[in-house]
Image (cartoon, rainbow, N blue to C red; front, side, top):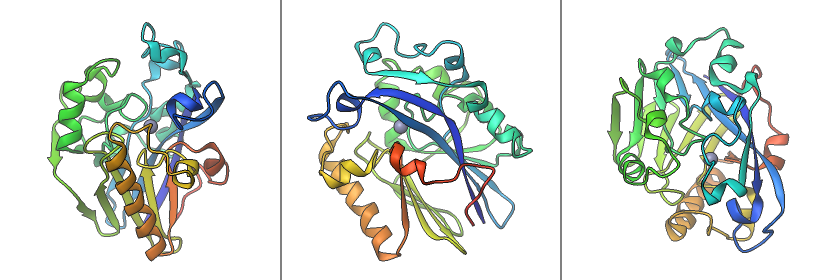
Length: 253
Ligand SMILES: [Zn+2]
């Protein structure tokens, strides 16, 4: 089994608004936007999230223009940060993806779902219902495009041998994290936005999450699981963390 980390651009954010409410307001940092590709021993390919819609390459404020949040976040996306380009670098096309896992439906995670309507698409029912009832600046045309057929699940799911989906509510209801148990590298916990950055754990700051108390519990669950299995936790958007990781074409196995 192989795990690839896909580089899908950056966001320039106000740290104290987006990541650590209560401290560092006005401090701008650039955070990584990513997706993950798993090649299972069975030959199945699992894509986890699809990144920001490619319209942001030409128009960085496409999603949030006109919303107050626009002052807190600007996208930085190069042509090569398009999910289809990143797959092409691995000699793959969207048609090669068998399963798409949607961890949640924020614009930086579900922007190109329309490219993957032929895949089996899995999401948590609560995340689906939350996104539908909170359209705001998260256009449903991107995360729920025509032709996509969601398999909605409730709770954890052993997706494939060595790949487990964990319900980690808090960031939004029905947020999902992924545990990958690799033969050489061991357990890798893809926290996604259950843990934005290390600092959130170190300072116990979950105010950036829609449901802070649930978010604290979910983060604790992931940290404990990783500790029990001597595993690696990969945070969703920590620039320091990601500086030490290797993007595709490198893979973890
Ligand atoms: Zn995110």
